[in-house]
Image (cartoon, rainbow over all chains, first blue to last red):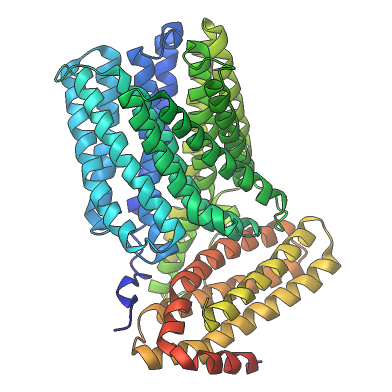
Length: 436
Length: 145
């Protein structure tokens, strides 16, 4: 044995359906979030504490973003670092089921005011994330020498904080413990800045330079930015909890600068890309990075006293820019690469098993996912983003219209991904019916 | 970065550059440019695969005794890469933009996830297992034609 050889799990890529199931269900949970806004109407945007808004938000953040990221970690980690998530064959499906079913129960319980259902959701979510987090941390620990592995580890540690605070808050809603609303901002900051922000950072250190043929991220960005962001989040949290305003302000400015700098560096690298083909993933990432930089600016403006983030309309807009503008855009862009590629790769394996390599022509990625559909869907996404921002300021019927646009945005994404699977199946049947 | 990792990673990036140029030329309808850039890309990629299959992988396998593990997986992916190069050549001959770009996109994603595995894991492991002999192996790879 030579050092590091035990980490080699090239051939242990999870079976196709483990991540794919999560990727196919997730858009429809996001769509349900949009529909919830349609049913709740104007009331949903009247304050950030309205249960139907909390329910809709979590259908998007947990049901879409987190569910996809759980699938992606299981898939990406072995490729990028050669380390698989331990027991991913049962941990991954079980945790995905817990999160998907848990967020539905949570949204149902919150929006209808049924604490028993909320409790059931709390248990499912706690169980699902409780299975995933230790397994992912164990894998990340083995890859700590790799900047992507480190960022992923810090991201999963953040998820631990998010899940702990979230389950505690949900237990408050379910009537088990007193509801500590002052913890909500901390929960949200760790979710978006830590869990989503650091994971996207770590993954992009690999995928942006390679897929778009850009120069690499500067060494200092790769090595230190995720850790600085994480420490700044810790400082801000301690400042918030102990009422140390100076520490809290330094911490949150640190978080904003870290993520903002990352977004600006990414946009700058993209201007220097040598792969000129314009695709939907590049557009989605640009939208995401622009939104992230904007959110950083708003945060710094708030600390400087130029704007008041406690003002409900601005607070709502800020959340929309981060969740829909940044996280959802980036995740959608990623799905448009990962789903057709995985399908193609598994068709290759089917060909190899049937000894038909080179004899049966299978669809390439652009035949599995023709470019037109995603382009239409991306326009729908931008419209949904614009309408949600409009609804945050105007309220009234705009909330229902924006909800409908968001539901359509996600449903179109789901439809495109289902199309890939349908074409995959056709090719698979063609291979199976070819005599060897 | 070790000798093998440095040399081979650099060649990956050269292939990426040529790929991007060929793809951009097809997208712009510049078929003469596309022929030239794609031929360069095709040649360098095949040469790179041969350097690995004829020199690097046997050296790795001899040192580590691992003949069915990572190198077997890499060889399978090399064949998938070659199959896509054949389809791209056919699309280029037919002047079929859509077919070329579709095969190109697939090759790009396949190659990049393949390269990540080599650069992050296989090359560093090879450098460690070869130790002082790494420069010799790089010299032998240079001589492959």
